[in-house]
Length: 212
Image (cartoon, rainbow, N blue to C red):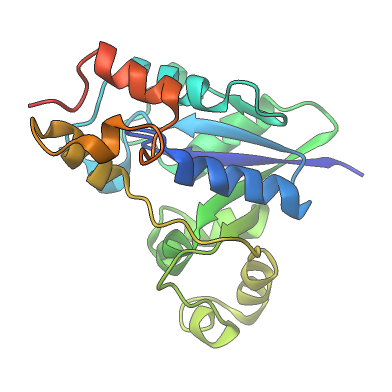
């Protein structure tokens, strides 16, 4: 039997403890044996949106998962430099880089699952790859909801990939906005309140990321 290796893509701008909780939850569920974090090079739905340079986002991701068993980070999107970098296309290359005893799966949040039918070559993606979905607050997933946009077989497959887990109320956008402030940044600076790991927080401060 092949080991399932989860492709966990995103801007990771910055990667935070909520992201880490999703990866940990996916591994704990037993649905996959390894999670590969894949920072995006050029996301289709974020064209024209300013992000931190790829090298910084990859470095922060590596810092966040340092010492985490079963997790690695990949620079595959930077090597491919697709414009835009559709998940379907990147996954094809990703699968070729896996070991013979590994098979790829796509790890997404429930909000992404609800919009998955709008993705580039979505039907082919679901038809050829296992999709693992982590729950997210406010996103209700059911067979009835999935059936609105998917055939019965696809909906059944997607529903089977929904994992159980703890919800995480952390947003990268809110983290960036908070770090841009010159005042009232205690919840970002103080370790016990920060949604970032100590290593990522220090990296952001050192490189003055997200500061106006």
